[in-house]
Amino acid sequence: MLFDTHMHTKFSTDSQMRLEEAVAKARELNLGITVTEHMDLAYPEPQAFLLDIEGYFREYEKYRSDELLLGIEIGMRTDCREDNRQIAAGHAFDYVIGSIHVIDNVDIYCESFYRSRSKEEVYGQYFNAMIDCLETYEFIDCLGHIDYIARYGRYDDPEIYYDQFKDSIDRILGILAGQGKALEINTRRLDSRERIENILPVYRRFHDLGGRLVTVGSDAHKPKDIGKGMKLALQLAGECGLKAVRFKDRKPEYL
Image (cartoon, rainbow, N blue to C red; front, side, top):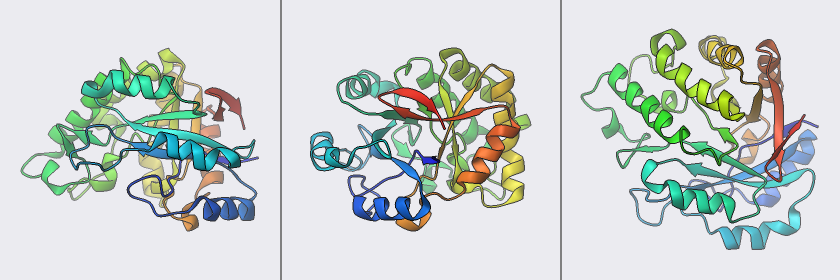
């Protein structure tokens, strides 16, 4: 069974999707799903992206099965490392994604993060933040959407090019490979051949550096986006010599 391992429902600040809607869409597509609600400690907007973990499990545990798993997407920050470590270790998550959403207490989504700064400077800061976190966030299972910043970069060409940021990307991929972690293929931006060709060298290089595992996730916040690009992502993984997995009980299982 194919598995969409990244999505958000009403327990995430930026989603209103009900679990029943996600389940219905997954059944329509004959797809397994992992719910991965946001937890971004110390988020600049008070009370935003703070997951009610107890409520999450209380409401969703009865739905957990081999086709529906419960995870979390942790916003990685060096100043929240130990609190995030306790969250990951202290709850029965199937899967823990580590992602970079906030740098210097500014959400990457915000225009102010890019104002009056070059792409090289901003993207370099983004990758450095990722490196700093990954070196001590060994408790995550997977790095989420390495190309996240390209969604929001305020530049004529916001794409990530491996050759342009080779040294930083190699360090990121090397850390993941050395720890035996997975790298996510986030399908949200696999919507054009050009974007696919831009990101493909990153996954090829991950294999070159010893990485073997990828997860595939739509990052859906609405039912219509669940399962988007799954088959294409699996094809890309195969082209790069990588194996697609889901995580259950924090252990990878081949799809």
